[in-house]
Image (tube, rainbow, N blue to C red; front, side):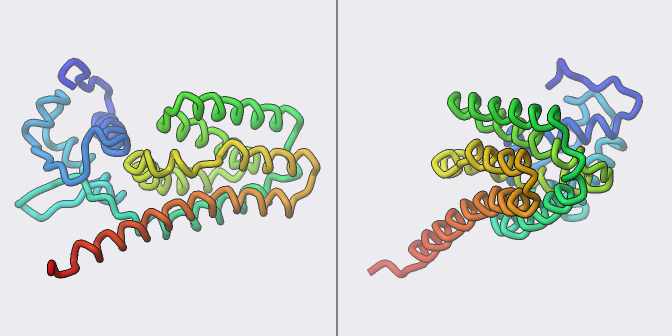
Length: 231
């Protein structure tokens, strides 16, 4: 990181963006202790903007701390995903309803193009690339709505679940049907069928939620097995 020292005017914002990416991608692993002095030196910034960035990340739920004792990357809490995905689904279906009559042929072509990129990335088994392409697909639906308040809310929520998606890479890769799910959404938008489009978009998110529900159940069973007394 030393060769990438921060030089922008808004240092705390750049520090936030850099650390956010490191945490979400897992390069700063869950439960990693943050050493303020070492990190400020690596980033080439003073401790004040770094502390401001860390406070913002703590507000996002990506950092936890205990006053004057320690600061660390927050642990993965899969139960958060079970609460977050329904919120994202609700906001995106709202955007779809608000923008449905605004979809042009060019907008639909762009959705098709973005989905084909997802298919190609799937074949390469690059989950991070797939997540980014998936974000662009869903952002396009939100952008068509013209509601500028929706995406900033969703972006913050997606940060949390993307971290989980990367952490549970192997589990998700086995279940994911993103490409096919998006094709159903596109088909219904082309046919000007609002309710079926909303249903397809909702299913896209509930399918992903279902993956995490399965993972959560597996982890609970594993925990129960570990707590059983040894005979």
